[in-house]
Amino acid sequence: RLGPETLSHEEMEIVSTTFVLLSDLSQVIRLCIDGGFDPKDAPGGLIDLVCRVSNAPDIKFLEADVKVRTRAVRKTFQSLMKASG
Image (cartoon, rainbow, N blue to C red; front, side, top):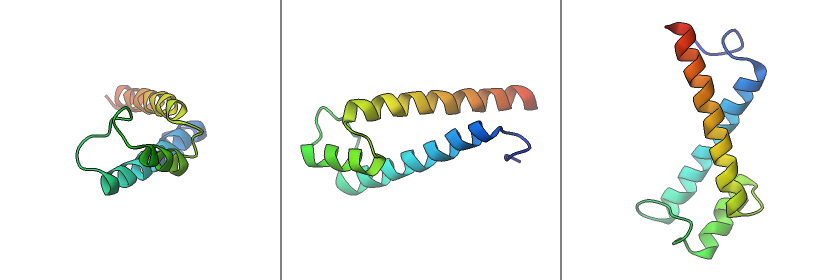
């Protein structure tokens, strides 16, 4: 079971907010395009929408934020696996 007894408040916050962010981005992208999302090929309106949904000032910031968040989530997951193994 995951929760306060397993994860710190900081870990819970990063995991939950990253989940919400990635879910929101996924839903918007799936509604707007078929296939994969490449910011280089995406229309400007979609880039604006993706940034608005994620409260990012621009796509470069969003890409960096997602990278930092997913690394933190991966680190949390790996430490959970080591602790349970």
